[in-house]
Length: 261
Image (cartoon, rainbow, N blue to C red; front, side, top):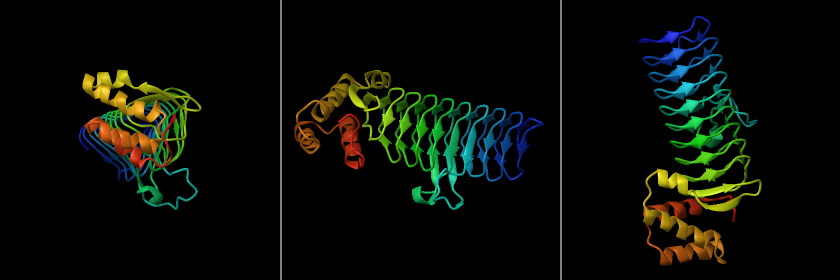
């Protein structure tokens, strides 16, 4: 272990693998079968449980519990994992559970994510890169959240829901259906509020790309066509650009129906 700083009150299993420049704060516990990448900072009173794999330069704040067993009665003690990418920030009192054999044995949080205080990431969730999840968001198992999505605080997400790229969900939402890419939605009964213009403009989408996204969602949300008719019209009348394909591919994979429709 090179240049590792472990507070005297911390408990670190000798089988844990710690990268260069890792720091472990007061009263924290790092169990065996843990990997912490270079320059990770684990603050006080945290638990990094067996099966956790954190990339480089992550920040785990006070009271967070990372890599504990799933809250799933079907779990039989299998040696599953919780994987976190590089530069992800996990704020106070977040809880992230390992995967199960029913979901690929792994829960995944990508790189450059921000999980604000009290977020719960359940077993077998797959979270992409650059995702922002605000305070007290609670997820059931097997959820997918794609790159650059943002989830407002105190939102609850049903198991097996998929949330698309650059989607923005407002706070205190109840997400029971899939949320397509690039849209704004919120509410206990979620409604479509148009494309996530702020998010996609900040990401450098061109005026043409934004127009394409608006047109696709006019067919889906603002026409009198049913979903099958809307998709057929999009394919016959619009150019299949990357953003259009992203939306259509997402909808074709949807198993829970589309939020707001």
